[in-house]
Length: 119
Image 1 (cartoon, rainbow, N blue to C red):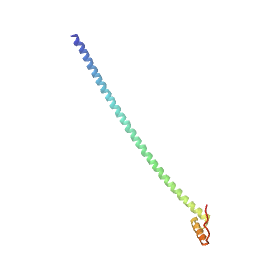
Image 2: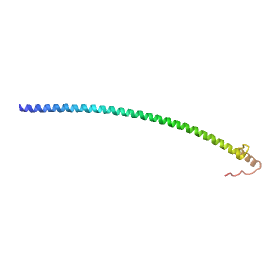
Image 3: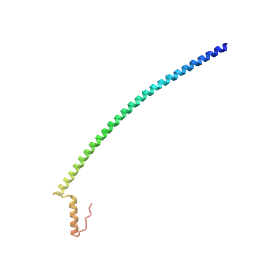
Image 4: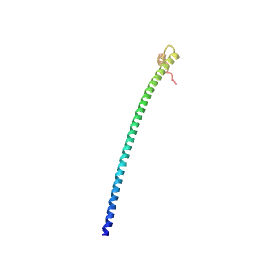
């Protein structure tokens, strides 16, 4: 009978070890589940913050492009005015360079002169 007593001790120890192992698995699962929830919450928060920053940057870039377009348009208009004023001042009476060149070609043709080689 002593033999059965030792077996009973072994089986009761085995059952306890099995219960402890089962409890450890349950605790590990519970901890893992809580960690997963915390990680998911942090990831969701980070994604929301990133989306917000991206939208803010898009708005900033759009505003910068609108400002750049307006400033560039104003600079081009100013440059056009300056070129017209320059042509008017250099040639006098508002005669443009292209009109002067066309007139010079007609005079060359009328006088049978060879065309000037420009440089």
